[in-house]
Image (spheres, rainbow, N blue to C red):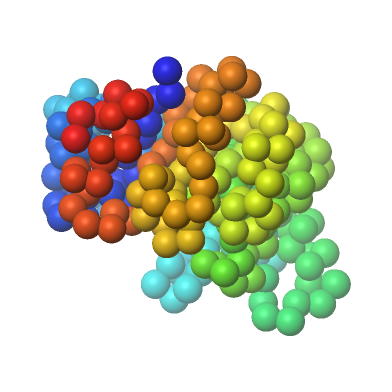
Length: 264
Ligand SMILES: O=C(O)[C@@H](O)C(=O)CO
Ligand SMILES: [Mg+2]
């Protein structure tokens, strides 16, 4: 049975962040994910999880200066020391929250990047991911990379599923896997079931949202029941993160999740 995780960066915006844990549990979720935990002390988040019987399934490494438009550090030449510090900080939270997987966002290429700039990003990305995977392996955790569509994040270094596979090959770490966000894949490349099948051996986490509005999965152009059925038949036993912006009140919009154990 597919296990759905509530993405608390997007779901339940009706509530303050720490109250979203209870709202998710009330709606039948047993797992949560969100972009960043760093505005809170690990213990506050641990309490929110424990009070509501929830597992922390995923969060991201610190992304650089998000407010200034940065979207990850992993491929940014010259920022290696900050990236290394971000890995150590993320592990501190992951241990406190018993979170088994962490996502390292790739970061943005400068506009009009030439071949030399792209090559420098690639080399930095590989070296940084090797370092992060090594540190996470010491504590038994998985590192994830996520292809993100270039319409939502123009210039994002990692956009395609085949590029993610290449990166996995270059880095060569057993605990490095792909965060397969079906919303981004549909916008960038489509052909979802075939992409899912090819990527399946490398997938460490899945996320869903309706396309193109990034609303509920039962809105828009993607046939999620068919995709989830295919994931199950492939043997996927991980979490599926509900990473969408509700069109209205979150709980009312969760009716689509009844088939997967939610109780809206
Ligand atoms: O798809 C997304 O946007 C997220 O999974 C993420 O980690 C970066 O924003
Ligand atoms: Mg995502």
